[in-house]
Length: 220
Image (cartoon, rainbow, N blue to C red; front, side, top):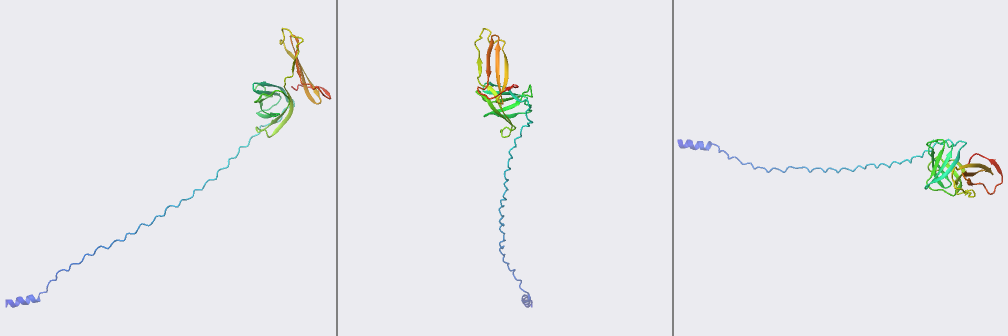
């Protein structure tokens, strides 16, 4: 009886299934996106500045109101390699530029006597008597403001008189001057004396002339 019951229980009991092993899936590869290509920066053209045109400075003219009516050349002389011309009654207030024939001059008021003017050429001028002086308001000497012929006396026209030579020759010298008009031009005649008498003379009187027009104010 017991055996029968055991058989029956065995028949009725359900067999417990063994657990099924679940296969482990290999992990699928993860898609990694490639980095997008960063575009290289485009070179921005830098505008090239056009060179600024340099304005040439305009040369300023020297103020010039004109010489006075008594303007004249007083004397001229050499000093080393320079030549000086001294004018009376110029009445300029600043530097003035000039030419004496082909020689360049720079003129300025005399600091002691500002109504008068001294012009300097940086070269020795000799052997020139009548010279054309042209004055300009600009250093480039392009704008003339006055022109006139003056007689410089830069010539060796001195005549020495030896008839009265004595031991006191050259002492107590004094001179007498005449200024004569021949054919509209002024000429000079200087006669000098010393302790011995007639010493020397100089003049630029013409050898040939048409009309003597009398005496005039100093022209040299």
